[in-house]
Image 1 (tube, helix red, strand yellow):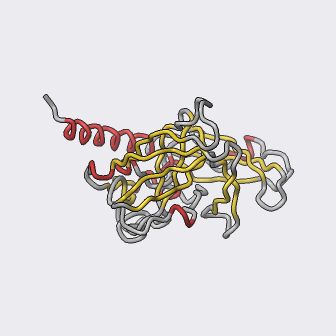
Image 2 (tube, rainbow, N blue to C red):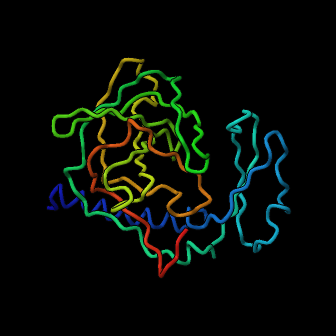
Length: 247
């Protein structure tokens, strides 16, 4: 019979393979070669214009957002190519071995279903975008309580999206911080502000954000309260490319 720890380590290896498959997919982060936005309030660029200069098998997807300064709607698009330089230079995602010590039992505290927290994004020049943060992830490490803001998102279902930094960033792991996705424990609507529910925070599932695979991604950066004052040697470290390739 396979031990629990061996089973967890095998699950981790399977997860690592699924991550590699995801980032190398036709719409994986490595395939993104262009993100373009129309001026605020202006119509979307026609497909033919957006595809100009790209091969026929390039994929086009559409985006929408609010302009960070005016609040007006913005229409955007992305071009994905399987011959992207990043995809062709990609070798692997470096990661730490599975470590059960980084599987933490904590709780999710629902604070306010309508709370919005400002997050700085890597391409916004220090400006912030408000993201919905309905509650906090709370856990203890060595007797100290940490309370991190994870924003609400839909990533194959309702999720909490934790953007965090730690002492490995820049030296051992991706410099701008890492992501962690958890099933949203408050998604059923059974919680009211002030309630809490147990949640497992498994840092072995920490990932390099999409901006580590494409410079056309605009990733949120860890807010101050999410910058842990110790190294988290678990999960993904960095993306390894062949030769001297750099984003």
